[in-house]
Length: 202
Image (cartoon, rainbow, N blue to C red; front, side):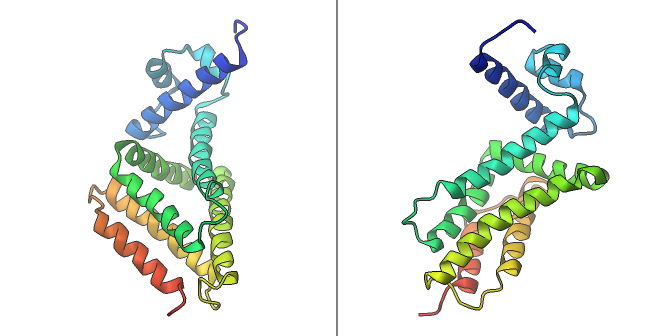
């Protein structure tokens, strides 16, 4: 590969990732080939292999980027934001994003990711890593809410994190895979349901 600047190399890599994401979201992992990614990106097969060893490596890189977005969201919350507002913002970012076409495609990619993992036991550690990353982020907010007197002291944090993560994924599946569109009323009712379960009564 001709020598190019670090910035140009990063731009080229990101183009491969974005184009591959579009192809995976549209066609699925099994049906996508490196040639499809070549055609979508306009980058030669050799050029792609300079950055990624395989289709699987590109696929996992896209998934990692998605998981990091959620993690960075929580890291970006101001220190003086209440834990109640952190939970609301986290839920709204995840669910209201489903109204946008880009986020719908990302949701479809996420479910394709789970499907691929189910058929490839050797990749299961990626799923566990994802769950534990989200678990740590959410459990930290809930624990801080308890410590600051915002949330009930007897919250079963592992159960609540499980419920929040699994139900939001379920809403995403219903909206983006089944085609039963999410509404703002669903988001507000879901948020209210979670808050009523964890907040202290006045």
